[in-house]
Length: 330
Image (cartoon, rainbow, N blue to C red):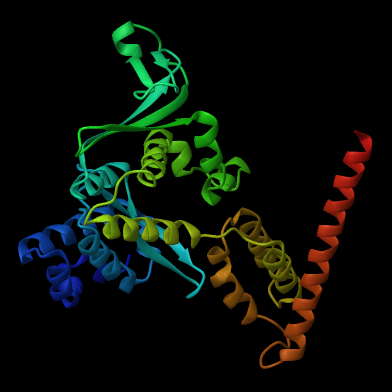
């Protein structure tokens, strides 16, 4: 672990900007840095992120007005791959409680709650009425088994006294989940876990609130909410799975390398286990250093790239043929 990111003095250069953006004093800054260090120590994967990216997280906390306090659940530090820099970076990820806090501070709501609906609940929904949710008795009150989630809703009481509700079915929530790259990797057994798998209920609530905000009245702090959503979206868009071209290029580098058969086997095993592009960065550097004639030879490097593209094209053609054969069989 980079020791500097777990030392408070590392974050001192951004203290002035933090205080200016958050309008808070040094005590709050020191507290948020302590929360950041706590999360770093609890997650070994964060130690692989660039040191400077942690300073950006602290400034994002100031910009959003949220806190990294784990007991509040407003925001967390997560590792994400930045395609622009080809490096793993620490990023701020907003929890559903963080969104509730921001929307309440916007001044247009008296209250906001998000509830999930389970099979064991007793619920009466009438979309033709103003209230829409006529009655919702949780499974705990009814003494029923919890059952599976079947949907959820966000209920806001506006400053005017009126109510506004957004309802999402489980199908709608699942569509959002299925677009998550980390969840796709989990389903394909390329990753041992995924936030949508481990924390489905929390992610479902966050999804419902974000959709609801689109239709709620906007106040003086609407820009801050939009900025946090933009940060969230950019964070989740940065991580990408390995492409077939990257895979075949790495495979060609392994075959052409001067490494022993034992090391080649280790590299191939690592390639098979890798999920995201950034996981191959160190391997590419290592393999390029162990090529027989690649040093300074753009021609040989181009041949490897062409071979990878050719394999990629063949792969696409085979998949297309497979799809046509399946269609014909139907």
